[in-house]
Length: 501
Image (cartoon, rainbow, N blue to C red):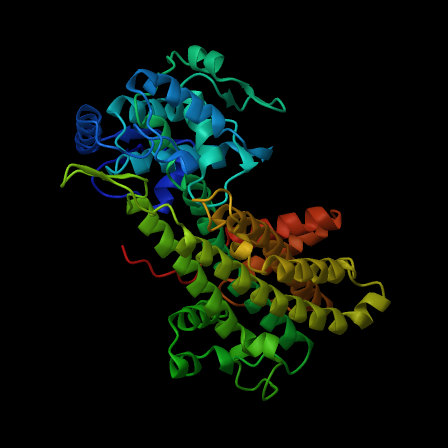
């Protein structure tokens, strides 16, 4: 298989797909334009050092000690102490792709020009990515006012003091991993410790991976509904296609609804649902006939996550932020990631709604399957519905706001976004929703089988055949759901999410 194309960080901001590519192993390169920006940004910091002007985190301490001077003789030690003091993360480590996503998100931030780090430090981040040296990053610790604990682990690897993923419980020594890769530890220059930490790179990097999963889920949801409509039509007069027409979607006008309805129509192209001679009910239950509206809301929530991530990937979020044009370091609050955090919150809420409707459709299929189940003609466990109901209930709990958990950490750090928590809950929601839609699809295919029907839709036909093979293999319920979820995700989307670029 051909190697992935290098991801080049330069004048244009990267996109979530670029972050995901590096997370999956693509190498990263700094363009000449990026190096010029890095050098110009660093020159502003060097001028501030020479002038002696008071700058937070440079010649003034951090947090509550913001107005206490740092002796220039102490600059080097101050960098090391700053990094060590912020290594307070706990919990399970991020996976290798997630950790790589954090590293490349912070590297991308350096290249925007707001950090004031030397080109050599940025190159060190690129080097560990390209050498496969992956920081061991505990998943909990950040409150979303810059992902300090996570980013401290990254810069600690670059300086040789951190830990790397090596299969052990707490990671292996970074210094040894660097040596094995032919890399040297780097001593941080004045201001670089704070600059390395001053970013929401956990929420941006791992959030980019979650975004792609969420975009895939929109297609999964539409495919599951299409299968359910085929199954309902096979079992009786249900499965009215009128709520999915362009007439209905355009009568309201929501972009997400229009796209979802179009995707479901495309999946059902050639289906028996469109047979004018078929007896059909005037209206199906809301879980069926309002699916385009529900899925449209999900699509729009996903698009908001993309919008906020792309904004963050183009931003200079550091505090203080280096402004090359004016030659100043300016204190500010661009690390406040509430817009991104609220996008994660909205995503979870939308997921809970679409999963709740999916569980109701599964329940309808389960009722319709009762005679076949009584005769011993079913193959999917009847209580798989209970698992879907359990997941849907958990999703409702996960939809509760996480960003209002802000607390005062010091006299000056008195509000936080909790974006990382909002993101972790969104990741859990995405995994559970995939299970719920898999259960729906399996019940739909089982109902089709029980009625001797073969779907003929452009997507539903091939998908039903693949799921039939999964069911026939007779795997336990957990494996059955995992395989069904994989099949749903593997189907091409009939329509893609609109993208501004």
